Image 1 (cartoon, rainbow, N blue to C red):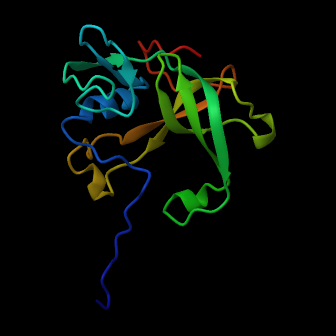
Image 2 (cartoon, one colour; image 1 turned 60 degrees about the vertical axis):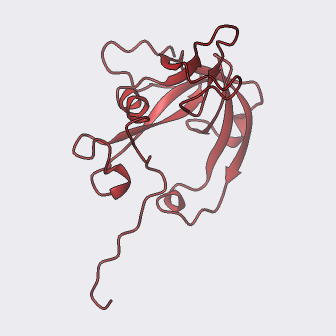
Length: 171
């Protein structure tokens, strides 16, 4: 193995496949998508994306745009993380957000000090850009494109939100 170049997988990049490609494509455009059950008597939204409804097990589910708003349910400040590139970002706030549509979403809170965090505080989606061309995790995705955007949240009203033309995400 002398002289071999070792590639380190980045744990912050998605594994894109045919099913999740619409989700990651929308995120790259600054839009957050959810899945919603279309079965009669259910109709619930869910996140993380699945090919079936986790409430009634129907496979009649579809993508829909999320409002991009929610409230902070809980959080933890991460002071140590050895996975690339998270070690360069510490400390950061890992969080769970209650989305306006109902589902809870694991995410990160940005643009806010730990002292300002409050359970129930209004938050709005933002997107962290990540180049994908250097990783095999994006091999089934758009690795030749501009990269990925990963949904993160910031306090509502705190600074700019990535919004390409035509995006309806509220701030």
